Amino acid sequence: MLHRTEGIVLKTFPLGEADLIVTYISPDFGLLKVFAKSPRKIKSRFGSSLEPLTRSRISFWGKEDAALPKLTQSDIIHPFQLIRENLNCFLKVSEIIELTINFMPERDANKKVYSLLLNTLHDFENNSSSPSRNKGVNKIISYDNLMITHHKIKFLHFVGYAPKLDACGGCGKSGRSFYISQGSIICEACAKGIDFPIRLSPAALKLYHDLLSWDIFKIKRIKPSNMLLSGLSDIINLHIRYILDKPLKTETFICSLSQHFNA
Image 1 (cartoon, rainbow, N blue to C red):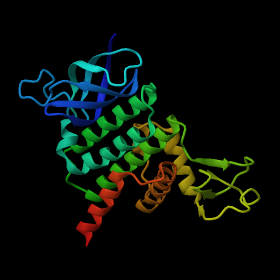
Image 2 (image 1 turned 60 degrees about the horizontal axis):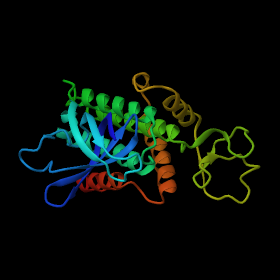
Image 3 (image 1 turned 135 degrees about the horizontal axis):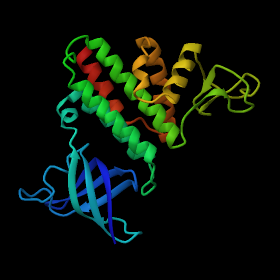
């Protein structure tokens, strides 16, 4: 059976001398893995459409339960080349790509996740090509981090893994103590026997609520301090790490790279 959809290339894996296994995120099929015949040859009909982050119209052939259907056509809609050419942008985007691959089940369509990723990529590309990109480095880094934190929070919400920071996960009462092991704020009465709370400030709770409820266009109005944004980002990363039982590889690489250049 022939299927048609659009998709964004998340990663590729070489198979044999010239073939590839391509992982897409698509609005109609969710996380989708397909077999691409001979795309690594010079005269491949797929051209550059299988480069990471490329958005394309694709066709693939296979039965409904086929583990690895065959890619038959791939026509570029938008290459997002500017992101790939900017190392800082590409590393940050790689983090949310890894997040998507780790949390999204295969063949489970989620149009909200697809739209979120598409909007984030466009925003990163527009920001990377801005004439003021090389001015006010600290502001640029802060905005990039804001976009990534926003994306992580919205993504976790869409796939059902967002931390609960609006009220106690036990009784629903208000509170400010977040417990990583519970993925939620827990009030003092319900927290007996649970260790290691993280105390959240009212500002951090408000920022989380804003990032959760606003879209990517509205968050440009938010200008949190680096300390506030960093603190909330750390909590989200700890939450992700606890769920996956491991840190994201990209996050670890970015941290080690930062430490190397700051040494």
